Image (cartoon, rainbow, N blue to C red; front, side, top):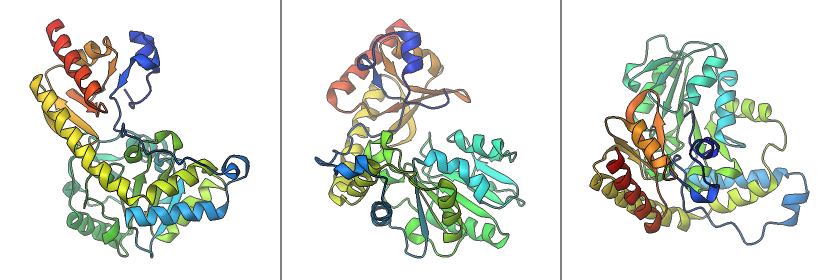
Length: 333
């Protein structure tokens, strides 16, 4: 599985309709932000206005605590930003802290700059010019402290290099983000809107860093890269501090329930965030397929055959369905 979230393959192999399935293959919040009751007619009929984009950027600065001296670029999802970074950043060897989100390796390899994969941010090769880190990491939730990131970035800055920090899941780990602590270090930070707010279909992502890099990326994206509805909804959600605080607590409570349910079925959770749990067992793919026959879709990994990842089910009814399916699947196995 290259990514989670697309049930096309699951339905082709295991049958059923979309509404029959419980999709736990992603780390997307099952409690999506409630859409505004009214989206302006102009958001649908007019070309997106510069003022609307500026409101979104301002709201993102507020939500992510981005210092004013940094640039901030908005894009239709972080995936496109990943593909632009090899074109925007300096030439030179690339190191990627692995295992992690596979697209980071793909985009650099595609530009003939295949990264050296390292097991720790503290094992950066002496010649590395670009270092890529997902923090907290996907899929294991591994977290590197801000102080260590700043130290490493300063060493890279001294050699004209950059540290890329992908904070796609930082919303659910208060205090994890490096953004509020940035000065003039050569660090670029990716933030994903859709995961925490449960609105992945809007396709909103951000890149923060020095204004030279963010300006270059913005020019690559061209005009009107975000739709009018995305600009309005994104700005409203990012300004909603009460939702962010309430949802952070709710996700933590749900993850505690999921972890308990998995442990009761003999699965040991050893990693993750409050949006997904990473568990281990001898043959994860066998369990993955047994659950799929019951129309529950999970995430497994070719590079780690003992790993299986579960997104939040989204409430007690779905959690009970998962728990029963695990019990039934284990009888089959």
